[in-house]
Image (cartoon, rainbow, N blue to C red; front, side, top):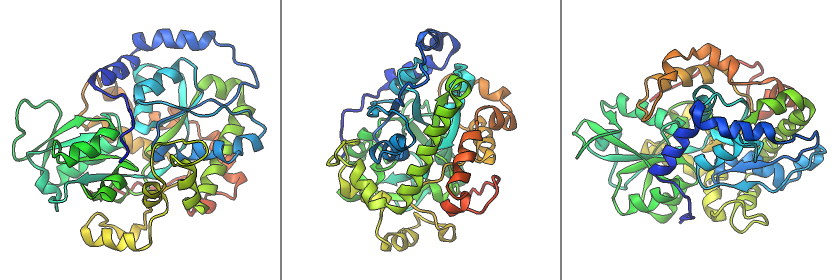
Length: 397
């Protein structure tokens, strides 16, 4: 069971909230400005040990940065979103993966001068519940854990609950009513034991923590998030605007390497699981190869079982448990911002009321580098997608 020492608590959440204010971010931004940015400064990756980080870790592990002529330091493992955001804003790392809603908060809450340059992956998350739960309606009156308020997990979960006649609540004194579901923020590594001990009725989170509950026999996937929001992004690649503006060639090479890593991962899923595992040469994550394989290279028979159980209700979508394609479709960012406005989130989220979805899609994302990288590698068809850099969002809760 993955019970590594994630440091995540309410205090950590408060710290992250403070970073995403103009006052809280200012000292870190000044520190970043003071750092000398040499033209050949190495790639410094910051990551959390979850499958969301796969392309960045593969790009390092398989030498794709080296092949682009870049120096790349060994990726730095962080134990919480607050730690990784703080290091990024201060310039201690220059390439990170963040939950897509966190990037919205970072740019428009703290005015962090950074942009999304690519998607890291699609899907890769699920709603895991106790073995006795067979329908989402049974979650009424219970508690579900989310990894953070600003996460696609929270957005998808609340849509799913509302579709089933349930009201998500974040600050409920005492037991939630029969038509309410209490949401709490919890570290991913705490979720599996909390479910096993029945402290919570379920959790929604990135892999491999859903696979871990299945492997241990303490929980089951009630619904995959990619079966609710087709091909949704979860974590995205975030880079400093200064690097994009002042080191465009370096930035292009970084994105090129990451895109090559995604292509390689699609064709080498079992090897990717081995590379990321605790037994791999670089020990990128604390997870066993078998658990990672269940996510990255599952048995073909798994899909039929999930269709039968209802974890997959849209088999015609042919969604993989986790998949990889780097292009950040504007329609996704627009829909994400629209849904964040209607999602229960603790803390000061007043900035969302004034945020125009179309503006955010243009301003938050710089797709110029990834477009070039995708075209170099054979276009979107190389990732199993139709050509054309637009799409329509499909959501079926």
